[in-house]
Amino acid sequence: MDTHRVLIADDHEDFRKGLAALLAATPSVEVVGSAADGAMAVALALDLQPDVVLMDLHMPRVNGIDATAQIVASSPHIGILVLTMMEDEESVFAAVRAGARGFLLKGARRAEITRAVQAVGAGEVIFGPGIADRVMAYFSGVRSRPVADAFPDLTERERVVLGLIAEGRENGEIARQLGLSVKTVRNHASNIFTKLQVAHRAQAIVKAREAGLG
Image (cartoon, rainbow, N blue to C red; front, side, top):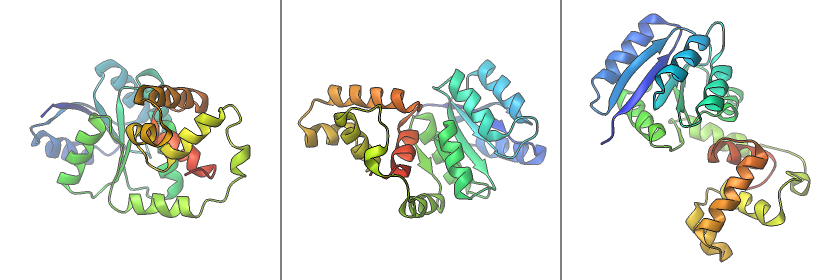
């Protein structure tokens, strides 16, 4: 199993130390640094280039949302895993829009945290228990502008592909359904992400579903 290098960003020293000790006991995780505020998190992330940043949202100087956005903009390969007490939908989606790939609540068990670190480090997107339910409840209650008015920069084919992405379909499944090659679907997805100005699939899904797709 690959070892994931982790940076911890939280303004509570005792929590940072406890989390570092917890992760240090996990063979597949190496804690490479810790930050007491968002500005320090950005600086250390860019310097240390960890695989994953465990990011609190409420921090001094620069908050976790802005810190996430700055890190992802400069180093999109770094996975941001939010670990916070804030469980409202606005915080979840603000974090995803900023580029976070995962969202866990403080109090999560060690197994949940280490599994999430490994998932985010491998490029996956993960929401902790309870958060996924809130995400689906949020989407089910979304009322937005007509789908036809959404994303005017997309071609009709790109809009179809985005709709399937928003349904949670993988590239291979989309290719089979549309009679396209996986490479063509991958190219469509890349163009969609560029036009939507998103860093990864999770952000595209959020934007699409809020617009009524999926």
